[in-house]
Image (tube, rainbow, N blue to C red; front, side):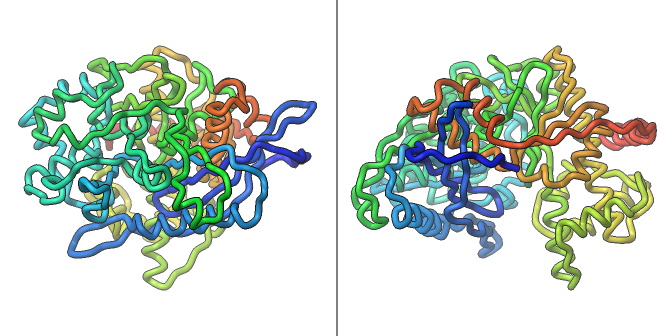
Length: 504
């Protein structure tokens, strides 16, 4: 929830182009300076659906449709606001990329990370370079969705797109290119590819060459919080802008921006960026590349201001999102309020799943996969939709506890507070379950963490806010936060023991 903010006549205006795995939006962020300090006010310019497209057995992103929607949102600003724009910045999910030919044209529709072409490629990669060698170089969590395995599948199949490619651009960098004409890849998203060296934070040429991926397709890596260029003249004319607009790389990975927006983040805090995925971690100055970090499969992703996002990707509200779609196909419509009401009414701890099990990654009948998982692990099988919902939420909270405890072991920090940001904080049942399962205070907010972080980092880049630390204070001044204290229940400890047994 945002605070009511008195407006000033000449705020500094920025646009965040925030593309998520299921929807996109353009948010206007206005940095306001009052006697009591600075605040950021957000308002929505345009929102649209982002749906993957399946064709010939493959799943793709419809990037041309996304570009069309981006232009609609930008034209809304040009038509309705007379104030100059101080910047535009794009952030998206990680790992996916586009390939361009020598003329800068798309060679094909970018693949979706849930496409099955990467099945089995994590294990196959170890035939060329060992697991420990890959981790020592990149420090990235092993997931079949990573860019490395997408490219390896293309190398193996002699994909003609790869053979013809002149430039690889990760998803936000593609839109930055169409905005500015500049081909660069921003560090925070590049790091998710598992192709960047964790120490020097540049493309790992030895790894790329070892896997026979064409090295010359990788453009320069730009630092977060840097100006890429200005809006192309022809695009300005098309959209109705009269002045050159800076195109800024903040953290082009949406989680990098969300983490930047976490108020009061310190060594005793862990964050959860909660949405389709739950990204759980802490902020460090240097990567942790230890054998224990490898064994527990933690990720050292790039952050802003020379930080490392030491985290683990966990399946998030995807479980409920995809279950809800399945129930819609079966003729049962639930809004989110009803889903949470059903969860509270269902029997507690009837069954537990590993949210990160392979069968839950792809599109399809998640409730059926949950029942099959419970049968395979000799548990009671959930019979009702309510039991499925409760199982998902309790299992997510238990997975969060597992990650938080592992974070403490790996960093040596005592974590007392879990700070949850993103759209998932609207799921108050999961927030309370998380406090209960982890036996730690949960503080939520902001909901629009990615947009807040995007706007704030643009303001730091342009000098309208002095630093990241100040920016986090500005965001804290701009929002209302909610606190969830743990409610003692020994059943959570029993369930956690069972959960660890299921994980093996």
